[in-house]
Image (tube, rainbow, N blue to C red):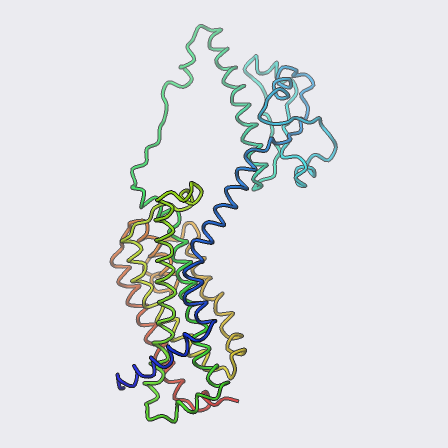
Length: 398
């Protein structure tokens, strides 16, 4: 192994990669722009859709209530929703979103309310549908008011104070700092984004430096040079690793600038979409991603080397993206907690520990185990890349 030869191959491959538009796109443009554009666009569209749904006066169908004129009149006069008369197929109308909900008034509701023995009111709705959920909330608020007025009137009739029903209030007070709140809210999304960019930043350089050289016929020229195979593969590996780390670094820089601009007042929408994160946690995430970047770079270089063309290499590497992102998605699921067994699962362990660090929780034993195991996996992948580069049947596969 010769450090000077490795540096020479690395410099040559890096210059060639910077001339490739696909490499520049995956290494610089996407990481630098994807965070602010996605955050702004998603938050803007989401806030507009939410505000529009919130401002809409929901259409609610009234079922029954013929013997409860007082409640029916109050429902029709309420500005919270628009009441329509009963029609056939109301369940299908709710499913088709032609009406948002239906409220079923039980027989004798007014009389039962006065006697303190009213039967339950049933609300039919479309579970999971945003506007139907708003309608249910308005209907429930209306009947809470009806219930409280009935209780207050009953207590007054017996000469009792209204505070008898609610002798005290329960209040909530947050004790966690804003950084921990922000880390808990979006802590799982940050490693997802970083791992995705770490992978995509290494894909095109790995293809170009292996299968791409086979297609251009420059692989044979490089192998004829008086440079050991291990020096060649390490030079190529460091080029792919540089691209991956550049994508990560630019994505974190973009994220930090977006948060700084949001804090400086570029808009309430973006500020609301970007809760503050602990800078130390972000630094910890970057440190933990380093061995994963090595793992991705070596693995992608090895797989792409087995292909005889760039198109074939893309066919091999595209499904790998789903394999990589699946453990990250599992880490986003509620109830998945970091333990000693999950700390040995590649990528999933990074997702879980990064979420903890961004929330201000530092499990040093798990951090050491994850960092060490990921370094071991990366070493195995790099050794495999060197071994595959020494196989003539792989280099000159036709």
